Image (tube, rainbow, N blue to C red; front, side, top):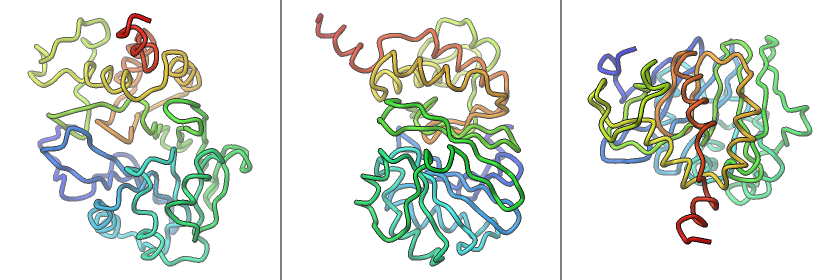
Length: 273
C-alpha cells in the first residue's frame, strides 16, 4: 500500500478488524503504534500509548465505530510509559467492570504503579493465550530481555499478524506507516539513503534501534528463534513501520538474525572491554 494514500490523522485498518490508532508527529524520530483488534462486539487494545497521546488514540478508536465500553482487555507487552502512560485515562473512559489488563507477571508488578484499579491477569496464568467469544485466539510468545524481563509478542491466529512490541522497531526521521523494505534489501549493503526508494534506509534504522534498546545479542537471537517459524503475514511493531508482506517479514527477520553487537555487547566493544 502506498503511504501517500493514507491520512495519518485518522485510523488505518491494516488487516481485517485490526486498526492502527497511533499518533503521527513529523518532527518525532520515534513513533508509537497502538493497535485495536475488533471481533464482533468485543475489542482488545494493544500497547495503548502515552498520556499525551490519549486523546488522539481514543478519538481514532471511536472513529472506527468501536464503543469504548466494548474494549474487554488492555494488553501491554512490556511496562514502558510510551505503552502504559495513558492507562488511567483508558480505564476512566472505557468504564467497564469487565475490563482487565493482560501482561506478564514481571510487567504487572510495574504496571500497578500506573493504575491499581483494573484486575491484572498474567499471561503465564492464561496458558499464554486469550480467546474472544468467537473462538478467535491471540497467542502470547515470550521474548525475555528483548528488551525487559517480561517482554512478549502477540500473534493473531486469524490474520497471522504479529504484534511485535519493540522487536523490529526503528528510529525514523522520515517515517511512514508501512515499511519500504523490498526484495533488494535481503542482501544489500545498507546505505544512509536507499538508492532504490530514495528514503532513509530502514535497515539501518532497525539496526540502530536494536543495538541501543535490546539488552544483548543473545537475548535478541533468542527472541527471533521464538517467532521465525510462525506463519506471519505482517509484523506490526510498537515503534517504526509495519512490515506489511510476508516477504518483508522474512527479510527483516533474517537481517536481524545476522546482526551482532547489541546492547551490552556493543557497549563492551566500544569500551574495549
